[in-house]
Image 1: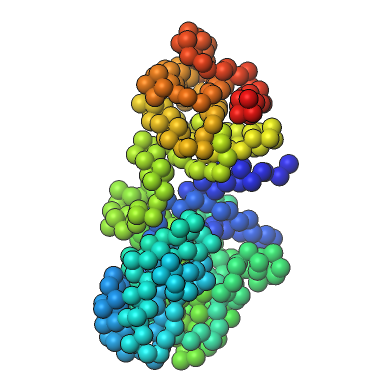
Image 2: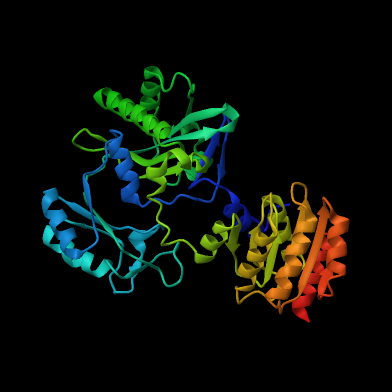
Length: 431
């Protein structure tokens, strides 16, 4: 059975890399849509690439219109591109609440940059990927605009099937690589990297040739590939995706746009990289949940889902949907839970005005169900819970947990299994 929309939302929320990861074998590509934990602005990614010798456009960053104008003059370029910096796609087709259309503008007149920046900075940019009111633009990138005579796609990522990093490339760049993989899979090329040897010269040259680079450009592209791998290693990336890796009419190979995903577990040795994380655009509830080692994802329904584990989250969302309900959110406890986390979780769930019922679905493996039960009763009393609460517990110390709940005297509805829990939660809404 295909996963429901709710389940897919849950899956997106729980995966831990950024953007689109690719696992490629000889016959097919499998695409994952993971959640991005470390969010870098475009200029920050370009700065990292620049520091590792990767060819990018010349650029400056400005947070005032006058600084943007000065940057445009200093570039002394034939053409300039001005880009609003927010953590959302679709900027080029976005609209500002200042009335300006488009978060990306090209001009040959540096004087125009100041006026455009004045209509971007401090205003909200609304795109298909932002909240309804958009996201306030605090910085702009002023870059040299380069013509692209040909676009290719290149990525380095971790592939479990290969037990290490793999290069993936296609001569068809500048478009959704999923479309290329689906319509012309023969144009997807893969090179497995030996983690001890790194990218060999012959591998880099072969990939460059597969990407369609000719003669001197082939050697130049191979050099960029090796530098991208050096970046991949040194910043503990899980993926570096360049789309497009292009060539210019002047004979340059340039990385025009890149997405970099990082290994969360490497934060302790990548402090400078993680310090760049722009949290100002993050959902406040998700940020509050993260303080307590909880994962929170908001959705559009009215039944809150309190779970432990990605699989249970998706199953819970799906079965609520199956019974005619809609998940309002889900909050994942994970393992090693303490009572305080349960209490904070309830605070987050009940703070959502859409929530009309809460469904707790816990399978205690690492998690002790009695700790969950104590946390639930404490939260219900101290927060004076006003919405129906349905609880399904299974696993470690479940009998003690059920005793705690039944003797609490609180209006908690017990459920025998997940199907029963979902049915009761949906019924509670309809009363």
